[in-house]
Length: 74
Image (cartoon, rainbow, N blue to C red; front, side, top):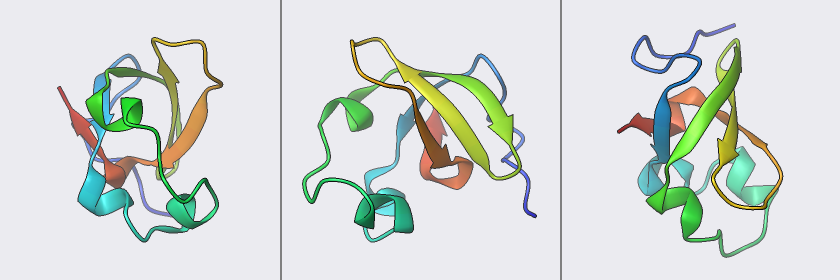
């Protein structure tokens, strides 16, 4: 199992990279038009397990899991 990039750690503030997210398994499993807030950020990394990171956005929305290689540190 791959590990998260070293720049992404618990507590990091991140945004989702639109190009990396487009066409991914996670994008295909979600709404056809992703919400803008995931690309605008910030989201806080709550937990990292393998290549996935649990994100909490500063909005009243559920936490999400995305692959860490789809994230960019801010």
